[in-house]
Image (cartoon, rainbow, N blue to C red; front, side, top):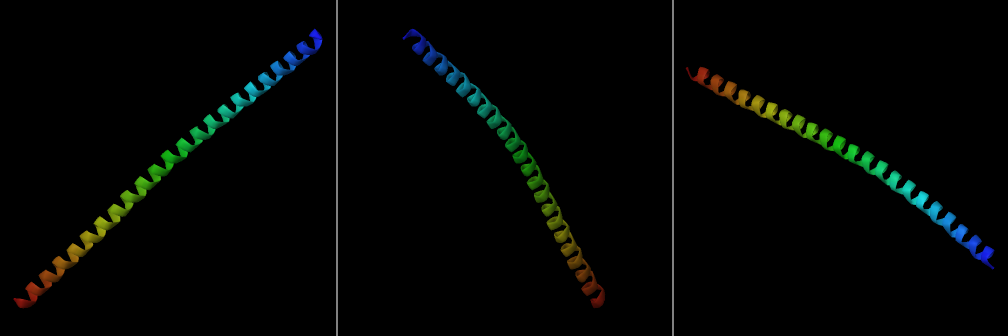
Length: 82
């Protein structure tokens, strides 16, 4: 009888060790995925910020061009009146 219960205890111990190892592996995988996700999110934020900055620069350049064009038109009108 004792050998049967010892065998069950050994089986349970093996199962516990296996489940513990599986859990550790799952946690390690989750950490790797989290790390990869954080790197991707940081890269995405950087790309998004660069894109927004370039869009702001393009808008500013466009506004400057429009302002120069208006000034040139004003100067032409003034020179035509003289």
